Image 1 (tube, rainbow, N blue to C red):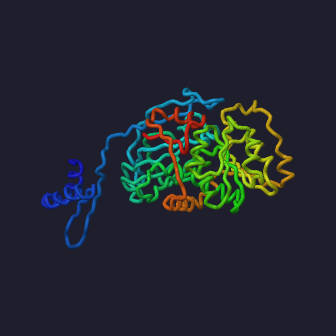
Image 2 (cartoon, rainbow, N blue to C red; image 1 turned 120 degrees about the vertical axis):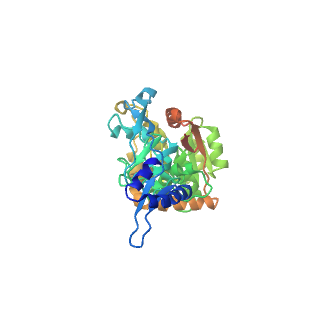
Image 3 (cartoon, helix red, strand yellow; image 1 turned 60 degrees about the vertical axis):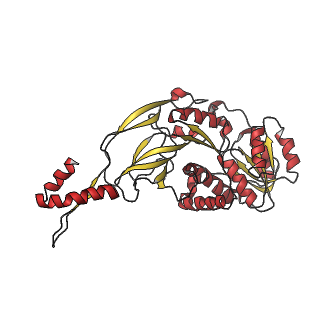
Length: 391
């Protein structure tokens, strides 16, 4: 505070400073900002000073030391501290509250040089700001990586998604972490992938692999809302029960204990019209050979191969005969294709939640120090619904 009064005294007389003292105290109490005004009939002099602490902030972050080979190892990442500089004009500082761990992180990190912060998105609260468009107390969604504190220049977009951090929309009393799930990237992946790639029609049959994950469980619910017969493939009886009893799926197949081909013929005797593929591998070949003419396949992920050495992948089922004979449309996609419609997906999914047409579930791991364990658990399919880390 002494420095602030010295700055005022350099431009105002002592009598004026005595008058300003009351204004400064009141402004600090009421608004958190300090405003000094010289009152005369001809001019007004205003000076604003941040009341935030000037103490240096230390961020913790995970740095990529080695690219993942086969299954990721804890030594592939290193937890380090970083001292952040003071804010510049238009910048703001955020503190992470929730992190997302997603399958795409496993293969896509290889697109970046070693030494970067591990990629990923987070919900963070603004704790200091020099930008009125991003006030203290608001939350943002950003692809900031695995780090606890970040200084954001709003003109800068991330290098992967090419997306700038954005304010979390008003979602009422819903958990802020949904901005990483049904009201974030996974939700938009389900929304746009299903509607734009599969183009489903009421009465058709859809099969979803990885059905108990964040994207798969979401796709199935949208499909049910549109009047489809929905079949999910997942890896445990618990997940099967959750899909059919809580998520509204018509059938669920545990690929670890059931013969997928035979079971699929039983529950979809008329064949499959749409396939939303999160897994790849043999399961996908099995499904595609039971598809109807002019079926549509949305390739969203290939988690079955993410931990494998790409140079020694096993030979897979030849799919060309099924694709050719039934004139299937097979299309891979990355959700950032629809960045220009991002808010459309969020608002539609929010509406479905409020109407009771869309449910969600989160598997929450607590503690920033447990990021890696949550990441590996997600790759092993230990989560039901969205995998989240809470700081």
